Image 1 (cartoon, protein in one colour):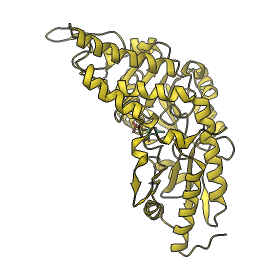
Image 2 (cartoon, helix red, strand yellow; image 1 turned 30 degrees about the vertical axis):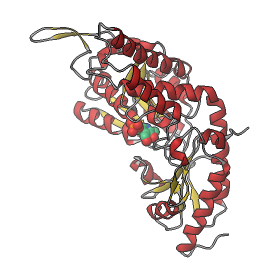
Image 3 (cartoon, protein in one colour; image 1 turned 90 degrees about the vertical axis):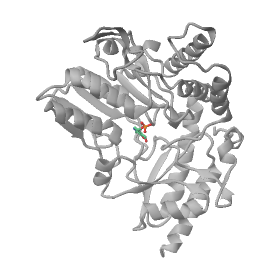
Image 4 (cartoon, protein in one colour; image 1 turned 45 degrees about the vertical axis):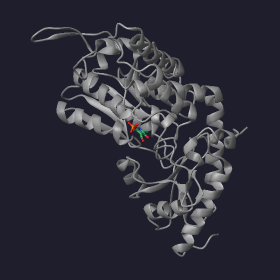
Length: 410
Ligand code: PLP
């Protein structure tokens, strides 16, 4: 059953706005989501009632700020069934989380002649940090191919594992194709050859029930701003014993235990990886976002988005000249498409005139675009406040765009 999106939409002040005099149809949720009143007021309340620097304060206000920050960590840990709250390191988002793993775990464990495995559908955030690491270490980066219908090629994945990589990284959900990867299966295969598994959870955490222990990955990166939370919120969720053994990533205040003239000892996890004053506002806002998502239920959100994606695929593929990329059947609420030889940027600009916000470009997946033989795609991505009317608005506006370029609707 679909969610009552019209009712949910009323919780999001920005969605009340109009664009170019038209109802705002926001379909760029894979880039970032809008924020409900519950998140906006949690941030304002934090500053009105609780703000102080965390962890070192001896007065009640600072203790309350610390409690709010640590409560947010516990909430996020429960949300993804983390191994322990100490295994949740707050970061600015997925990108910083993956750079942390590459810069700390990677530098400590990947050496000359070793292999790191990624996939051809990885976002640049789960690719470039590994490129930098491999170049620095003299290691080999092995990219696993994708199938025609936009899934990880399991046969090539198996071949890549024959190199006995130190580390295997892949996305749970592709931001460009909507593919939902079989994470538990891939993690099991990677573990069988002794690799550590890094999952990019930027597009899965907001949209489906995540249980990192059931997935049995080792590191899981997520972004709060893609799940109704504030910009600059996110986390690395990791097996605590791995974090314990890792060298620090950033140096500074809070991450230390004792500091001598020429060396230091380090704080316990997760603080060892949170140098400097953290973004407490982001953590508090993210906790409010999780509260909002939990009230609706991740299972219902996933079902709703799948119905929207299915409707979008059906309607878009009926338009002559439109190609939709990615798997048919089970997939996430991300629909990438091209329309004949119309440049995706032109499509997005024309749709904007109708108040329809979509993304156009390479979606930070240039290796994937090369494999699809396109420079860019247009992409509509859905969330809990979108409804079937938004899909119809997308399709209607697309037909109008096509007509401007001489395409005749089927
Ligand atoms: N990975 C995927 C699959 C993404 O879609 C994104 C953002 O679009 C990222 C990583 C990077 O996330 P952030 O920019 O929040 O660090």
